Length: 315
Length: 278
Image (cartoon, rainbow over all chains, first blue to last red; front, side, top):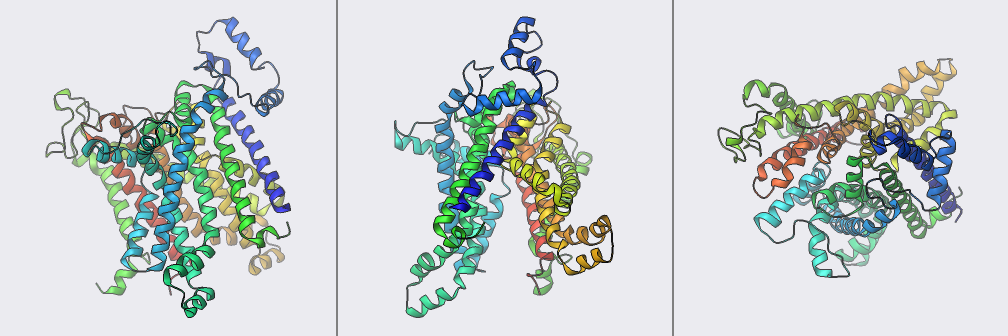
């Protein structure tokens, strides 16, 4: 528990540093934020109002603290372009991004672990080589290009799946899955390679273990040896990579949402960047970082559950 | 060629790394000398020749303005590779310096590494997008944004390596003999960390190609009409139905360039890994 508590503290510290980055990044904008945010033709009255609103007339550290105070209370400011609270705009679009991220994660995990296990079991055969080629490609292909190719193949050439849009799962689960399949694959494929490589390496170690030899000697079936004995012992490093994958996928969703015109947080971020809607950009940055921190906490928690050596390690 | 020489590849690299090196050289050659061999203009608009599929006149077809796709892929590649190589060099220099400082001077270590953690809590692309939101979309700014994004990753690696090397007996001996900190760093730490730095540098090159393409694709990279692999895709994705080749080829080149870079990096790593090979 002490291990977990110290992790919570250090991640909270990281999150605090991220708020500083988000604050400073926006302050790097050339000129006064009021000029960039309101445009050059804003009336002096609007500028004064804006400056008072964002407390721009006070010293920078005070401004930061005031901003931080608002954030802690869940107030991310108001979108300049949408004219609505940033938090509302983000929360509205969050389900789309979450659905996409989780579906992509599922694909990456199932195929990544599966391919990794298969490659380790038949190491140095053509199966192993095919898996390593799939993994190498997954680290090299841009997700947006893969998305475009998938659209061409599966919704233009052979129109099997829709090329974009989002259907809410609670309205029509089947149609929602059909709409999510291509984007989730384009996104998930990115992380599939890393997971497959890590699973393969970790499985190779596990398959050499004494417990696998003992299991074979006892006459345990091969499938049971692979799944029950080897894979269970190989999972800890895979868990780490998967955690990173889950964190990264949420960021990668930005690009894939654009390709498949999904109304998620990523599209909101990109549109806001193009329109220079800084409060939304800040809000989205904080959300992505918070996701990363939470996923890391979750992974740490799963660690401590799965391996008593970590739980009991003195800090 | 006997089986053994085949396995050894070029200069001790394995086969896939050696092939990747050749592919990269060919790619750079195409980008540097391509414009001399292939006369078509990358920016000339010819509405009469718009959306033509690949043919002998236009090897990779033409886009919605009748511009030659191959010529644009060549010019766009120049932009991508320029951004990637400058980013890589800057990241290697700055990241190595920061990593050495953090690894060698305990006073700065905690603070520097926490800052790196914070930067790494944001996915590279997201942070780069945010940085681009406050700057003009120019090539220089893309390079700056990507460098800022990658430096913590480089610094982390070098710091870890420096901490390890610092404790090696012969480095401690040099210390005890009174060699100055910077002398120890220059003669022992840096040469020992170099293979890892080179490998990381090659991966940074690959990331930079991908991330520059992503920024351009999202419309916050170097602006059109100057083509880049990413912004070609950005314009072409609305034409997938009518002219798939406009999107297909720029992405294919991104994939080839990044794949070759990564495989070369893997090869160099294996070459220097004492656990591998004989």
